[in-house]
Image (cartoon, rainbow, N blue to C red; front, side):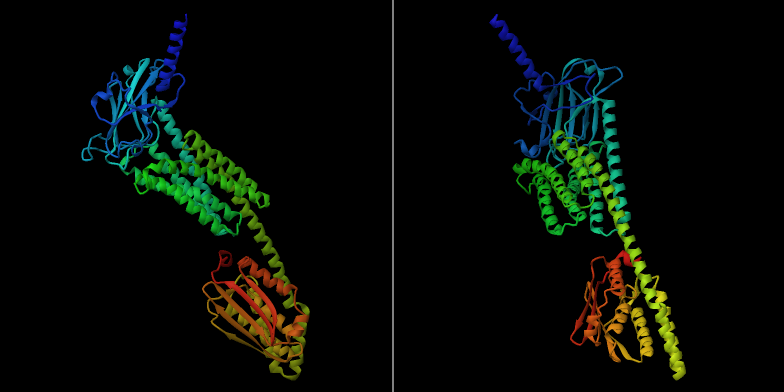
Length: 596
């Protein structure tokens, strides 16, 4: 009895052990099945394809990986054999097939000793070897697909490549399933690329109209990198491409992958206006280069090949690190109550799930699907940011229009005209020629004021002409001798309209109450990036300080400068030892908002 129990359990143990080495394919249940268990020989012999050949002394392992890591050198021919057990009859309407995504450089496929196909020409030297193609499907004839155990064998050579490698496990399934799987993969790829390019195009359209141009450009490059990596990683597994150029295309794919890993955190630093974004982005990009480049350098023997497994593993883990860092940035922004941070955080969590799915289950499209979801959330956020900017811009324009109207009212208000007319009447009685001149100067100033009302920028020369016209009017009205002098090159300089005129008017009103003579000095200093305009006068600075304008005039100046330059300007109005000084510091390069 004990002997029978021992035999029974031994048989069970034997069956279980055997099952671990075999692949069980069930036609009624399986779609596409990865072939994982292989026996490997570093020798080359035609008898290895024979199903009766005993391969127990062969090395156990996986077909996926670089030849350089298995201890058998870089070039040569080797064999892989796997036992496949078909548990049910194959339906008459179906054909069993073997699908090989990528195997470098050339290979032959045998089923129960019968050659069912080849990709390229396998040889024992480079001269006779011919490079194969990717995404190959080999059909097994029905008479060789009976229920029971079968032997699948691969003969592979790698003389035309840097090293032999199988990117993905060969798969077994029905031809219809293989075609359907490739079609779904291709459709998903086009869908993802379409989503990403649409989002990138959305950013391109609004780049010129946005305040945060750097963030938009970064996102466009990020989307393009993501599309490029999808194309270069998925398409070779779907389309039959010559494997001779596989490593070159893989390097291009690495460059796109570098962009995906590094630009996502950089984009978040920019969108949330991190003050130290340059330093943080530089450090993170440098780390990305290390983790992405070193696996490829190991394949080219630049880095030690023995470290490839580590760098390859680190490269995959770093994808999760990039997603994790991005989530941390979004969480920090959420605590700081920055706009739309929570929306981006939701998209980043979906992206992280996709990355982890790719790492855990080997699904090459999972990370891209996650990024597509993230892209949708990003597009929503970008739209909201743009809407916020448009609202702020509209508010600024409305406020500026109101101030502009108030300023124009100040210039043409009744008492201004009344005083001017009274002066004209007085001069008509005393000096008709001066009265005529005053009328002409007053009409010239009013004409220029009305011409400036609809413009967002004017040349510095035009603004100076208006200032001189105003001085002529005030000199005639108040019988003063105020002059205007210009120093420096004023060519090709544009400013918001009426800001100098407003500052000049303030200076005359507050600095020349008791003085009848004086001078306004305009000086221009220009560097590569900044133009500085100094408007100084030698009026009474004590009276100017006591009656310092904080009303419509200075508000108008600041609002005009803010509209065109955002925060990239300086406006200073201050006393000096012998008068008053107003300083305008503006950038040389006009923004799109200025041009409009």
